[in-house]
Image 1 (tube, protein in one colour):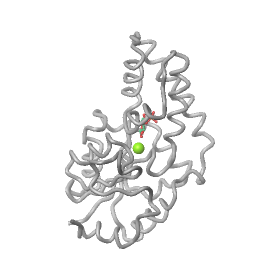
Image 2 (cartoon, rainbow, N blue to C red):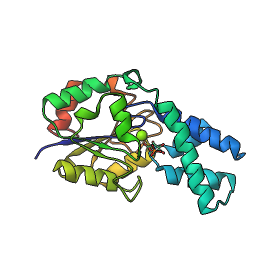
Image 3 (cartoon, protein in one colour):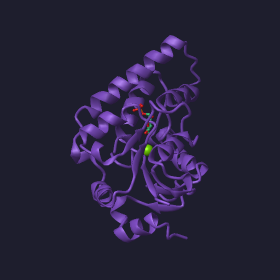
Length: 220
Ligand code: BG6
Ligand code: MG
């Protein structure tokens, strides 16, 4: 009856939400769409394609298929230019501490991300080796809040969904984890991630006692 740990990437392991925002903001400006950090909250955890659909809905813009694809490419190229310069300094506080602790105990660990850039980001920040499997935007057909990404992760880890712990910073991700019947842990503002089973501002608040309780599912 082992426990599996699943981590979202953007906003949980690395602070890439700011780069996604800057890249979307640039496209929004070009299209004359007002796009704020608050709007960006809705983009967290959401696939690239779905983000563009939301952006165009916000601006009341109808795009041809060609335009749509071209804008997706443009956004991603701008985003890649930002992440190209990333290194270990952009890992969020105490993430390596938690990953190391779990790895030493041989706890199965997966990445569960909507991003198609997940592998290259993990390589850049040197965290790839912690994960037994990566489930990312290339492995799923249904985007969060659909639970598919976490269900695939649980399957690959050989852990039952109810024995999985999910760390998420996005509304859509918490909903996906809850729908999968997993233990959801919100990273970020508790007043935003109200549906999470537990809330923490970041990993500095997560100690070994709490991790042990999760591993043994000694939780209320
Ligand atoms: C998620 C981010 O992790 O990945 C979203 O929170 C992003 O904001 C999504 O849109 C897709 O990422 P990518 O790298 O495939 O464009
Ligand atoms: Mg995220």
